[in-house]
Image (cartoon, rainbow, N blue to C red; front, top):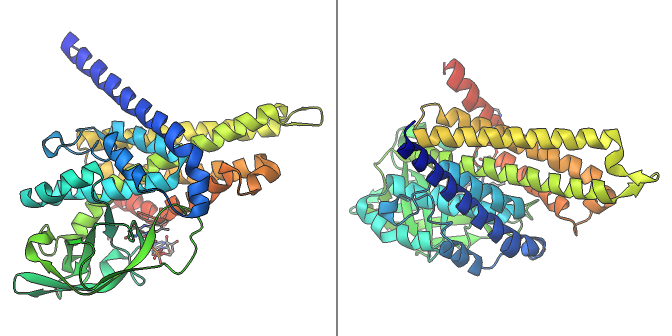
Length: 390
Ligand SMILES: Cc1cc2nc3c(=O)[nH]c(=O)nc-3n(C[C@H](O)[C@H](O)[C@H](O)COP(=O)(O)OP(=O)(O)OC[C@H]3O[C@@H](n4cnc5c(N)ncnc54)[C@H](O)[C@@H]3O)c2cc1C
């Protein structure tokens, strides 16, 4: 390798470390101290979005020509991990706003669409949401029933979406609807809907979420919402492909967020194992407790390595990126769930009360196993990419 190439690699590594350090500092000082209260209040301040915009986290992964930081995936996963270590609601905001909406517009928007929305999303002046799921269409995205009917140079959208993160606070929604008689995935098209729009309503979910309580989740009802054709994202019939390509960005962020939860659980357990004394010694001196700590540590490192491998594959444009990303999401979220389970047990009654962060990690991790494709669906993607579809 030439000296130049070495310098380039060293520069990139320094930049990557600097971005991670900034995210770690932000998460430690500006998120972690408030995460418990935000969870209890079921709300996080809007100023946090502006702050993430100022720090460059919202724009980081966007191409430089769109005003972004041009960061590669290997850098981004560091940001998601650090923020996820402090608060899954904030990390979830980032995964949706940046991963599913802003990057999706960057990838699939026309030059006019990018110019109109991407810089404002990247600064945090606008908040985005991604409206795919419906009551009757969760894992089976292609069965969604929302409809968009062409009416001259406009479309009229009707339908109801559910469990939409940022749904009640968003200024802009990427909405997926059926536009043609073609069955399944071929009949879907994506639209950008500016909010509020006439005929649009954000309704309460009607249930208390188990985790991600500081996130905003809503049902979105569209009744004859008129959207000009220039707000169609991509071609008619391309909606399914756009939805899935957005999820490739999002899933990597979810996987990295899970590594953050696993590390946070390990931190709490190690601290407690050093301090808590029973039977005349530190509980960390009992071999059964050591075995749990060793398993948590090893699985967390394995998850981090798999996330980094998927991120590098995405950066290279490797055709195996989707499979690796699904493996990273599957393994990291299951490892983090085991870590949270062990953390609650090892903290004893402290971990069972809502004053302790491990109780929140235990609730939050369940969401990461469900959204952006449940872990059953990740297994389908992995297996089908190996054995092919019938
Ligand atoms: C915290 C949170 C935030 C969310 N945010 C958003 C958002 O911003 N935007 C959005 O559009 N959606 C969002 N969702 C919705 C989420 O994406 C869906 O809940 C998810 O895709 C699963 O759909 P479902 O819940 O309807 O489960 P279903 O699809 O009904 O699945 C039920 C069970 O059956 C299993 N299953 C289904 N099909 C198969 C199969 N073929 N093989 C094996 N098992 C299968 C599933 O794995 C699951 O265990 C969010 C959900 C949560 C919990």
